[in-house]
Amino acid sequence: MYSPRVIALVAFIGSVNAQVAGYGQCGGSGYSGSTTCTSGFYCTSQNPWYYQCIPGTATTSATSTSKATVTTTTITSSSTSTSTTLKTTTTAQTATKTSTSTGAATCTGTFSAISASDFVAKLHPGWNLGNTLDATPNEGSWNNAPVAASTFSAVQKAGFKSVRIPDSWIWADVTASGANLTMIEEKFYRLWYQVGTKLACKSSLVAFEPINEPPCNTATDAAEINKLNKIFLQAINDAGGFNPQRVVTLVGGGEDSVKTSQWFVAPTGFSNPYAIQFHYYSPYDFIFSAWGKTIWGSDTDKAAVTTDFTLIRNNFTNIPILIGEYDASPTNTEPAARWKYTDHLIRTALGLNFACVLWDNGLDHLDRNAGTWRDPNSISMITKSTASTANSLPDSTEDSSATSQWSSAYIFHQYGTSVVAQSLPFIFNGNTLTSISDSTGSTLTSGTDYSVSGANITFSASYLSKKLSATTAPGVIANLTLTFSGGRSSPVVQIVQWKPPTLSSTTAIASSVSGSDLSIPITWGGLPTVAAVKALTTSGVYLVDTWTVYLGPLQQARATYSSQYNWDSSHVIITSSAISSVISAGVSTVFTFEFYPRVAGGVNAVNFTLTV
Ligand SMILES: *[C@@H]1O[C@H](CO)[C@@H](O)[C@H](O)[C@H]1NC(C)=O
Ligand SMILES: *[C@@H]1O[C@H](CO)[C@@H](O)[C@H](O)[C@H]1NC(C)=O
Ligand SMILES: *[C@@H]1O[C@H](CO)[C@@H](O)[C@H](O)[C@H]1NC(C)=O
Ligand SMILES: *[C@@H]1O[C@H](CO)[C@@H](O)[C@H](O)[C@H]1NC(C)=O
Ligand SMILES: *[C@@H]1O[C@H](CO)[C@@H](O)[C@H](O)[C@H]1NC(C)=O
Image (cartoon, rainbow, N blue to C red; front, side):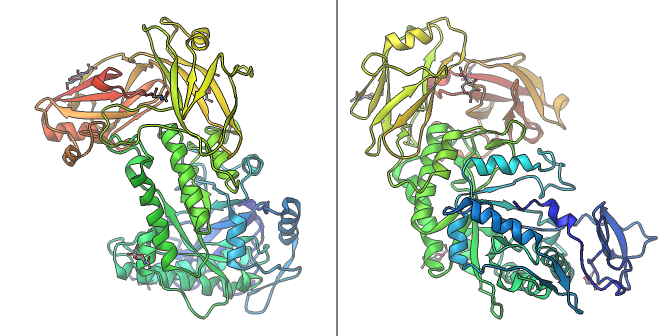
């Protein structure tokens, strides 16, 4: 399997005596080329493996924060023959490389040319090594340790067939004010010439993608991005080896499906098979927990995804397409809504011949330390998505005018109330329920512990009474795994005892806590997550996003996850940005933290007031 460290270990082979061009490599572990930069540039260490020629002279204090932008896609195993594909990759990695007098690589060994459509078909399902090599300033700077081989083993074991390794675009932002496009183009060429040289002899199952999500606002920006696609192709072709035959996945503005549809122009003059890649995080409010949007799944919701995908497909009828990033994260989305979304996205994508590569920033899906998946049901639906039968799914609220939210991913029981039977509506999709097992591995008895009637699975009062009573301590009491006759979904239904959480304090003076996030200790009352946060000033005005008055009751005056609120295992958090909003509004504000279940009347919520 390809490891990104290979990039650093393969020696750069160039003409030893020549001066290195601007932005070229001039040193580093394993490097044996010239260490002298062309006039106007000097050689400086970017990291122990990589020294680069950057503008200026060695006596100036000029530093560069740019770093290699590498996006490669590697198939770790094919759907038809895992071992063969892995062997191919390994063999290609050991192919030797020599250079011609011009520096272009020549490979020994063979290259099994593959069409872009075959490549895209083999990619699915793929996984992103997110927030790792794209972290700035260095790998390890964000929420992940430097990548370990065991991560790729866990990804492969889960059934993923490919890995995408994105890197930063920050230095190549063509929209930045005063951006020097000449410099970006020169760097871009040198960078891809170097990557192309180092990976010149890799297998046909390694593809390159020029740049991750290049910012783009206008047709002019998009034209520059089209130019970057061409420069990228020129550079890897100049680097030689197998690159002229290598599959590439080209990009449009922002890797956004609409901008790509509007402005992408296919480069001419190159023989590389190519696919188009776009990224999909829509609808924004559901994916990023903005404005209290915790529900998804109506016909309108589904049609929006289908329409987005169909439009880009219709714009590029003959070009293979992949979704290089998408994600409904278990970190912040409600499970029944998430499973409906994931199921619909994957099925719609496959119906249009798109391959899908899951985004995972290290906090989303794979716990890289433990090697475990946070939401095995999503992973199962993604990795086994070619199943011929549809998935059975827990149903949940879909109506955006609802005043409360129910979800069949949970059996919620309120502390202090008597235990009664509970019915969970399911979307069976033609399958039958075959078994239910609980966290201890024991199997529930059909007819006694539960029964199926129409679209409902009903858990009896006698069964639920074995698990909890009115006074059971709040928390997750049991995880029930449901198995169906068809599909690939084995949803976990959690039995949750709940009461409203409590905060250790309920007020603070905004000006005395400004400048950083405010973490408030919480004693959870059931699920240890925040569903939504309402922010209302004491004069009755919405603190942010007053237009949310046009949304449903579960969304009005609600803030946005991460930018305005957050939580960790023992705190709820009001961000410094939300505190600033209170200070600039000049009015005390009540933050109402809402929890699952989102019941009517603000029963499962707590208030925290920031005073001015
Ligand atoms: C832009 O970059 C080019 C190439 O590196 C350089 O020659 C030129 O001086 C730069 N222009 C400005 C305005 O900095
Ligand atoms: C191409 O994409 C644009 C932008 O999404 C859309 O307006 C247009 O209808 C699409 N064309 C086709 C043929 O679907
Ligand atoms: C199914 O369960 C829901 C929610 O508990 C309930 O409102 C509905 O009446 C049930 N339907 C049947 C047919 O039992
Ligand atoms: C239920 O599953 C969650 C998440 O996997 C786990 O943290 C928890 O310990 C489980 N609870 C029980 C009672 O099995
Ligand atoms: C929170 O404060 C609002 C007023 O902003 C009030 O209507 C609501 O009842 C309070 N909720 C709780 C749980 O105290």
